[in-house]
Length: 363
Ligand SMILES: NC(=O)c1ccc[n+]([C@@H]2O[C@H](COP(=O)([O-])OP(=O)(O)OC[C@H]3O[C@@H](n4cnc5c(N)ncnc54)[C@H](OP(=O)(O)O)[C@@H]3O)[C@@H](O)[C@H]2O)c1
Image (cartoon, rainbow, N blue to C red; front, side):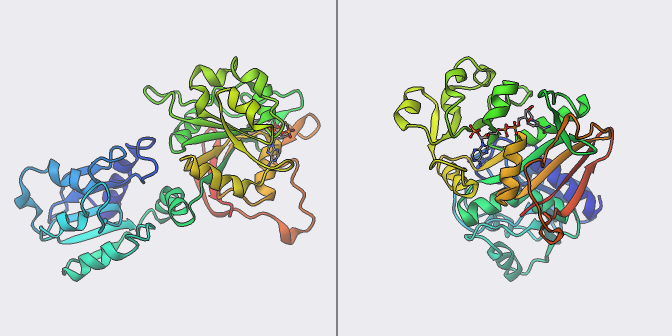
């Protein structure tokens, strides 16, 4: 097994727990013997479970094979007592040939101390040379949560090649190919909530769930609805066929009593344009740590204008719909000078067929 394959495998292990560990990060671990033959693997399976390194160690019955073995872990091993004892103390019992980690733990309680600790014990500790962008992306929500104590926002848009996200009469399902639905459901797995604007709710009456067994009810919903226009319809909406009222968070400047009576969760904001960064702090307080923004068009523009979203995921169908009847997903964005254009950084092409699926950092 090459080092690249080992880190790839560790990432695959980590992803097995997507949707089950929030607010903690997913972690995967792979152990190779001294000749780089596969020995064991493990992952952090759910909130409060044993850590990935410990699972991989526990699965290996013959510990003698660990002599000069190589450990690959997606996140720096921990040095502090949380729900688990420090992983470094379990690791230091063995004579590792090398320990390779994916990314430093952004948690200030760890943040390089795990690496230092293991180096001080004489181990060869190194950062992986592979999957750097993916690893950064994998842990970015956790990093923002832990450093800034606010919720992470990512936009997900689906459009034609000329950026049309819906036709004037509201038809937007499905501009992209049916096979891209899997991408959307997989993305939803990594987020605590899906956010939409009230017009999308009124037009599409969506369910916004994950069509995967056991996870149908995982995602909460955040509805940007300053005037409370959704309220008379919520109890009969499709949102409620897959979740309870308390898992629907209506962000509104309506009178509180009116909303509280309805049984939904309510986030009060001042009248006028909703300040989305301020909202990210309020959502964090409600234990909603990551949010996938799925539209509609005005909502996307508010996020772009306010530079409130950290990342964009874009699914592009190789077709043209034109602006005559179509609405561009950036319709309400008003850039006056080229120097003010919004740039997507660290662009990654994740899939090219039949739709193009790309992602990048917005802010
Ligand atoms: N292709 C895609 O990716 C995609 C995804 C989702 C939806 N869509 C389509 O998009 C269409 C709906 O988009 P839309 O632009 O008409 O409406 P929308 O974005 O769904 O909802 C816009 C409304 O939400 C509220 N809102 C959102 N952000 C706000 C903020 N920061 N501050 C204050 N209010 C905020 C406002 O409500 P008030 O007007 O009550 O103040 C605003 O008018 C539908 O046809 C849907 O099918 C396409």
